[in-house]
Length: 257
Image 1 (cartoon, rainbow, N blue to C red):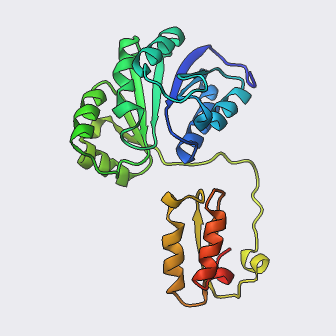
Image 2 (spheres, one colour):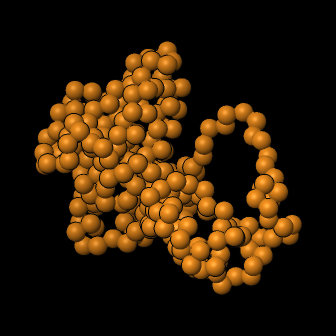
Image 3 (cartoon, rainbow, N blue to C red):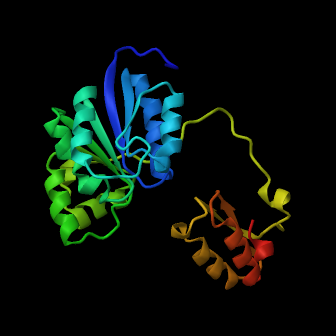
């Protein structure tokens, strides 16, 4: 352990996300924070290469990681495996992360946790603006009965939870996203470093260089704006080369940084 716990009280953090993104980074930060309150985070993940970086980060902190499929792709048996793991850990709190509103098997992780004897069940909803559908409404509504609290990151998301997914307002808590401060932050002269003339408007987008983040749409819009408007894209991802080529095609390569 990298810190001495006041008490050995386990809290289970669950994710079955298909990849590691901001929502999974949220879990990593949550794990590093709850130890300040005498809790011992234990990660329960879908396993495999998909969540490998998250699993590794939690292990580096010195905490346990349980993988439902132990390095394999999902092959069924979700409910039984999750139940066995939770019955073994016996956490006081079960938190399941929802990058999308229908993850965790339409929130079915919640009744499984209750059957394992866990009373305090919490979820974090990152994208409740995603529209619902009949199957989703039925399964998620039944599962959500067992959820004690629903965390979301904005007041706008609270409205989507109520309107799209019929979550009772009394269960919702808004906790804004943040990152831990690591000391003084050095201010950068972005215009000077990038050679952008004074008075230019700079747009910034922070996120993985993936299609779902919409960089292509931003580039299309930038191509229709005056030459004094620049864009800064902060992130890494598989579309970097494609986006560079697209910026050249649109004639905005010198305005995208």
